[in-house]
Length: 337
Image (tube, rainbow, N blue to C red; front, side, top):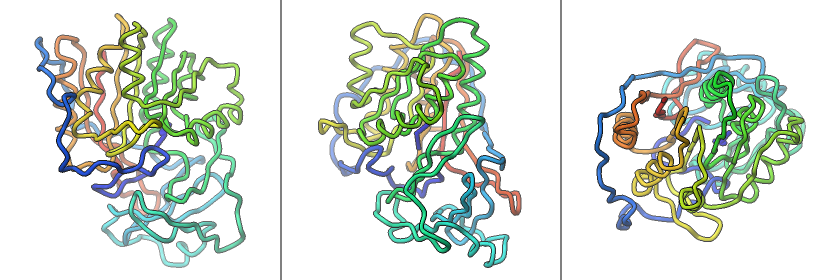
């Protein structure tokens, strides 16, 4: 559902999705030295800008001066936003009329706390996306359990599942709190959801119950994503759609180390290896990395050489309500069969 808000550059996701564990100076392992695939490269479409507009479930109300003012269901909240270099469009009184403000460390992996100007609020509150109920949560890492810019990917995936008119298996790696998995399950897919955090898996299961989708086939697995994908390849498990939304740095439940620039090529290869003979798509989202979308676009085209299809790459953005400005949140690249 990633899972996973607008990101300040060059930082990692919160420990709920993996804590920072390896300095960039450490040597890469053999995962990074894979032979280049042969065959014609897939077609390409870029840059692609996928936009989320304000709606009754979520809206980016205003942004600027390193902050963003958002509406999540019943609550207006203020959080840090490193990419909001401009000035706010709304007057200060609108920024003061809020329910929750994140204070403290503004780094992605830094601890902080929430201040409630009006009245104390509980840790969780009911939220909704396109008719799917789930729980928002005030975490100490400024996230609230949903990454609204991912709605573009969710809608795309749901269309693929519905239009396939056959059983579809979806693998959601680094799945976080499960909204993408719930969207896929509601569309009719059999879903496998993998995350290294027991807390995130528990939250995702809770969201399934809140969404009244307990009768849908979703496997919730707490495991290192790389190890799980390697095991799926060995035992011949295959998927029609793979989503992977990795952190910049992370650690699995048994101490497994993840470093995006070293391990992403091997993970992309595994995603190709565990596709069915009639695959639909593989979707990669990348937050907080020192790269342009051309880097992951080229990786995905090389990875899917000989497979046909098209690689579409660009940015996920959220359209602001106050002045219509675009806030870029992440890079993405997706191979579409």
